[in-house]
Image (cartoon, rainbow, N blue to C red; front, side, top):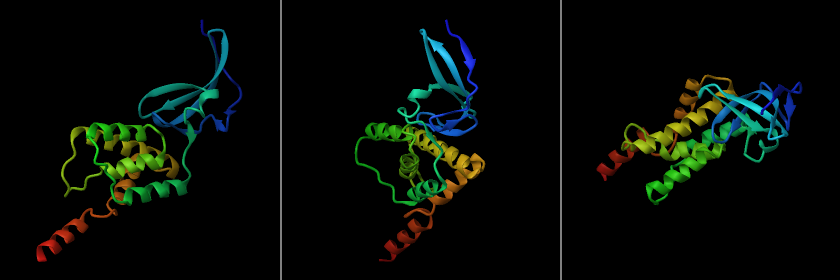
Length: 190
């Protein structure tokens, strides 16, 4: 038997109802309530988190929220650091794709904005670069989506604007766009 009742209090462990948070495996969500539920004869306090884009609701025990990595949205200066990361040179390890794919997936699900930015940077392809495989594209889009959702929530902009902001910063990176064409023409002249 499960009984459920709303708790009048609206804050626990620094999190409050109506606040946007980052849940590692799902990205940005909003705490819609803090409930008390009885499970197996024990009373549990739960954060009720809605992920609007995924049309999903998650109930997380208040006591476990910190240990599973739930956190507040990043500060704007941290978002700026993440945007600087995507401008960097891609660091692709020379290991098998399956191993790298696992590492990228772990970074995406870590909930850490800098780690997610590294995946976006490493898997990004400009129009003049070789195409990505299907699995590379899936991981890239998952990382880009996670990053854009948090940037959109922090900067109070639409996700589309956030994606454009990330892509603008990606194109500022080394050896992308015109930089490659210039190097090619210099190579031919030599």
